[in-house]
Length: 405
Image (cartoon, rainbow, N blue to C red; front, side):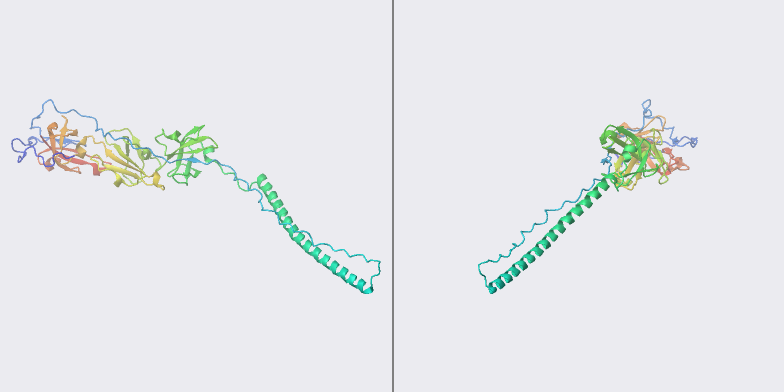
């Protein structure tokens, strides 16, 4: 916020000139021994007697909570794999036609047949008998082939039926255990699946696991966990008719991973250290953005009040979370003020608020640094001064100089 980037309420005036902010008194105030001290020029009368603003609550950021998105999938019911039946074959083998006709010998006639005739008859009989034998061999050969096929089919079918019966009575595949059906609150799992298909395996609780925080019986409706802020996902079993509400553990001892917009958190600046949700208070960090499926603080919006970020990177992108944070300074907006910003300061010289118009303020910022100075009074060159030290996050400490409007 910089409504008057080049604004100077007293052009050309120096601290020692009339109309400009005055020097500190001849007897300078003692340097404050506690963080949050403020220096000011008491020789300058309050231009707004009796109207200085009273301390106000920490700024209201008015952020709307972001959507709570979790993967919700139904867990398939367990059970043995279906038994495969005996193979079904095609049409029966083709049936061969009738055997060649059987020729019987013609009985000799008694009406005087010559010897040559009898010889011819004998030769004819021999030929007919030969033809009959040849036809029988072919027929048996055909029946043997056909019979072989029938026997083969019968044998194969019999073996398959026997195997099927054996599979049915003594399955070789063990039944798949149902982790949803057997779980109790407090049980933890690894999920080797993905965003749409869970693959749970029971394990001890720790980083990278899902803990069962609630069980909803008598339903497979995955929305049953939607009212639980700490729930990361839900899985169900239609066979067991129950739903497990699961909470992901990013870091052991950390619950800030689940923090929502406008909640406050605090922790250490040491990488991979746990953060926790706490009551909003001076020095705490307020969540101003929660970014799902994001693992970089570079994605945080360029907000006036953005001061710190937490990024959680997991093995699955859909579980990544980034929290964009704003520290609650005891001095109000002073920690976010820039040179030439107009502000409203309380009568104790300890709390500052931004104003939309300089006519609504009583001071403006004449200097700023993100350091705690040994002699802020000298650095501010006679202007009023205010500093705030943040021991756990020294990069967020600051010193500002101010002058009366």
